[in-house]
Length: 407
Image 1 (spheres, one colour):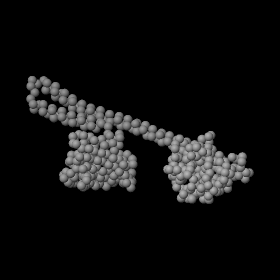
Image 2 (tube, one colour; image 1 turned 30 degrees about the vertical axis):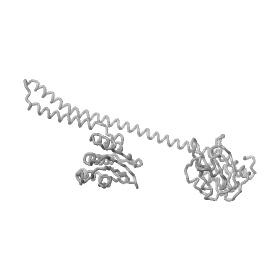
Image 3 (cartoon, one colour; image 1 turned 135 degrees about the vertical axis):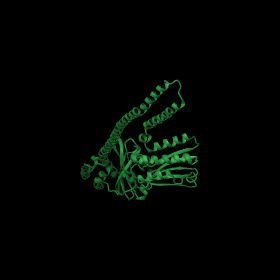
């Protein structure tokens, strides 16, 4: 403890405390005090392991030799060579040769740095705050049997000095992380609020459009029908030629009404995104066809398929829609698959089937393929299609940078 230290060591402890002041992260704090600590406990390697609160992980920060212990951002406590100390089974221990000490080399332990760097004599003390182990302070020497119990006592004194400061740094990092998470949550909440407000505006505008269409078109048609029927009702007999124009007009009015209803339906693409829209179209197309087809949709784009601009998403949907329609109608396939993938900043969309092929299906370059090719070109994407022994495919490759620059 501090009371047992010599006057010289006591001054060094005060210097360590002064050097710690203003250090805001673990690595900076370790580097700031390493030289002063080396005057008390000479070492070739020093590290501090800090336990992540509420978890089974810890992080190592090193001074002196750089090993793989600090190169792994976090590691399981169960795999630490000093796990007995980190879980509170012991508070300190010392070894003359760590390369031969079984305490460091149990099954699953990550003790390779001990052998790789020839670490021999080692001593370890727990960092405790209010009785809780928050980490460990470790010293290593390349010389065998280099540390004594006196060095272990000095290490404990240094650990007692460092522990409260490291506890404060850990708490500050937790608070910072919590603030980041809270800020991100607020951003998401605000985005949802704005999205809901925008959706409400769009729905209101759509309601007004539907009202005008119904008033100007459907209501006008129904009014004319009513007047015609009124005149026909006054006739003793109604010849067929009088009913036929009314029947055609009624069919046209029904078609117009269907179009209004279709336009009024919420767009899956707008509400849920490109992948869900394609999945919905694929499922509905096969189901409505009555064919015994199976299908699959796979998205391995690492989220890029959901970050496309509205213009690009609509274009890719139209290409997929046309390709799926062609496959359902002409391919005689048993299975259709749609796959998104990402490689070297290029987003790929492929629609494939195991059918008879493009040429046999009569699609040797018709307007459907031409339309898909033109659509791809308009968004800066590369279009290709073909048939092989295993599958027929339509493929679009979109450089992500090109997509970001698309207005």
